[in-house]
Image (cartoon, rainbow, N blue to C red; front, side, top):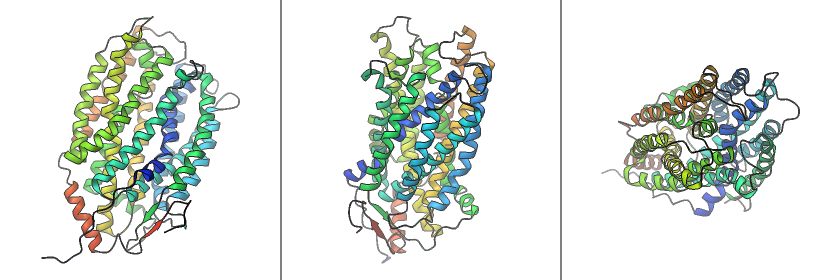
Length: 483
């Protein structure tokens, strides 16, 4: 019988630390809604360069700007991660990256949402690059920090679920502004975008102070510090468990993601809702994550993370199909007429909330597996792979659907009139991709091996090799002396 030491059960992360840590995700989620759903349409409506608002040329110019930005952004994540995994400062590994990333995001928000003069393709690309550079630092740092904050298989689902639920609060707060301002401030309305930018500029520094100031950071030493070799990236990507997760994440991002740039167009022109109510419908979709994220986290503790993702994929396909079959509301619709669509949006959002949190939680498990086998801490690098796939997915959706809208003659200007043929083309873009892509994403988890039992074995092996415990230190909240 082996006498190797067995790892003591990892303590659950205290709720107050999860809440302080998740604070930065609140404005970040609100920003992602504005940039992902409303920004493309906003710039098409503004007009860009010398192209008239809503025209085919404006569609293509905005598509080119966003796609070129994403191409740069995709290459940035692994470079940031390679440096992050080698970072060691008196205030921790991940805090400095948050502190550097937030000012870049603030500058980008100011220039993108509050531009002076007529926007150009060059200016949009430049300030989107600045914004996304800061977001790369923040997203990778938060994801990697989550993996070391929570160490146990099921507790990671809990931490990621609460984080995601907090992010929902930020998204919903932005989308409910029309209710509290009597329609004067609404996402998607040109005059409101600078105000939304100002709100984000105020919220980010407050959230950063709470997150970086009150959350402890536990650092574990490994036998070697990561090198700057790109071979590390390729080797990690080639691992069977990691390759499955990366491909699944791409497909599960593309599925719901294909609807994001079309969302306002679809529910306004194809389903008959006015613009402020379109934003309120999105509250049902995003707000469902506040309930859905904890639900899927608990379900994963019973069935395992990969099986729970597959369950969510089946449920998503059913609810998305039902949502598509709902009839268009009338020109002067009542609240009761909109209730079926609200319920449908809530159901789809409830199912989709499983994808991000469970895949990210599984990445943390793979990071432990890699640490055991290669004796290097590549946590940031591994998380950069899925943040990269998320960005690829976002760029592909715009690259695919906007040229199609332009080809079918759809006019994206704020008050444009579109032909039935153009609206039909819009509906076809919105209808087919999500279900097919999500089904392929769920199929990636057939034969997946890294379950709770295997992860417990990995944690025991790490303890036996004294990898996780050697020279381990706790960098406490900045408001206290380091322990």
